[in-house]
Length: 293
Image (cartoon, rainbow, N blue to C red):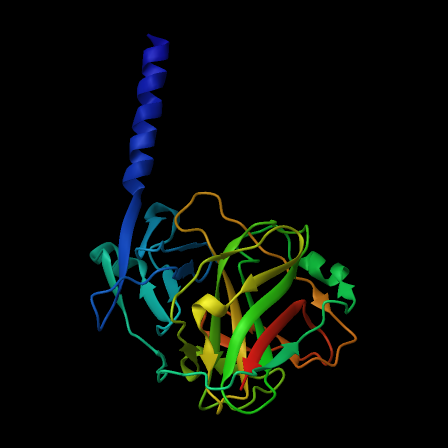
């Protein structure tokens, strides 16, 4: 009898948990298309989840207070803040597109010039990475500001980064490229609003995966990320995704110092602000390769 009662209690609790887990769908406000791989973060607690490739995400609404507010951030869309009340009132959320409209780019030159920003051989400041622990609520997003050289459009070809054992070896993540017509070159220590920036929208939005601790290199050519000539720099945003899975992973990228590279450690907070840290020669261990004609 006791075993039967215990079994009934477990089933009842499981049922209550499943009822608390609700699903929402993200779509474009201008087209009938889903918004994949969007980051949904409760601003106060920094608890987050992400949509899958169909624009669906789930939340346990019982975990948040009635005045909770959520930031929704996705490639090619304006950052959006919604309240818990809004989530309860509708299962469909519409995001406003916001990106740099690119014309079809045809590569005419047979001899593209290769540029590399960053250096795999620079010293790693592993001790500085110790403040970021294996905590998905604090180590799920990185921002790096890159200054470009050369004339013409920049075709991003590959991106490398170093992962320490303070995080996970195989997080899945997106790479966003943000540029601004208002902010030509971000000043160190200055705070900017995210609405001042727009995405360079990739032709195909890929979900990348790191391949262990140490250096990982990902191929960006399939994404076809092309930065127009008028932009002399861009923020690269690494956003870890969970695609609705219960186990969330983190990424911890250390600093490199003693550098003269055109890289700057940045920040992009869920409150909708971003900028470059007020440091002279430290930057995250990232190496970007791009091509110009």
